[in-house]
Image (cartoon, rainbow, N blue to C red):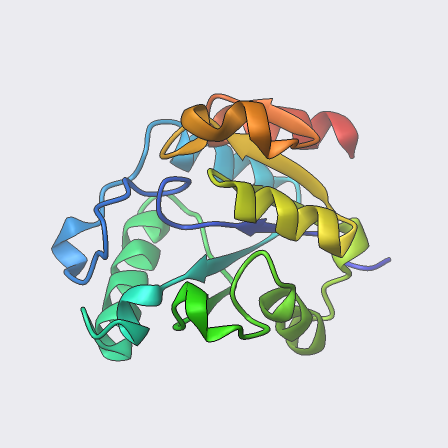
Length: 177
């Protein structure tokens, strides 16, 4: 059987969105994040992050800064027994017209090639319309969390499910399995 994956946005979904976060010390987990991620991993689901990071393309920080922030996030999550298998990111700004910026499916396509992820069997969780649209375009189940920018865009997101946080998203996913 194909391993199923949860594809997560980073800022506003797992950690507090600190607007172009470039300092690893700024990693701050959102309430419910550890609980939700631990439950998903405990159910045998793979966890990957797919994140737009236009701060790189805009010159606000460099790719190495992004890797340091992701490494810090992995370190904090590991303290709770949670492992992110892979981080995928788009470094381009919205005007770049690239294939990797969410809601385009380039990051999921890359995960499919590298991990054998089947997007139609995946769950996409995020706090923005672009996350929900990524899930829709890929044929995945989309879940909007009200953390980050989620509450502000709930009415227009059109997610399959809308929940308060990652802990509640895990409940939804576990019922769907």
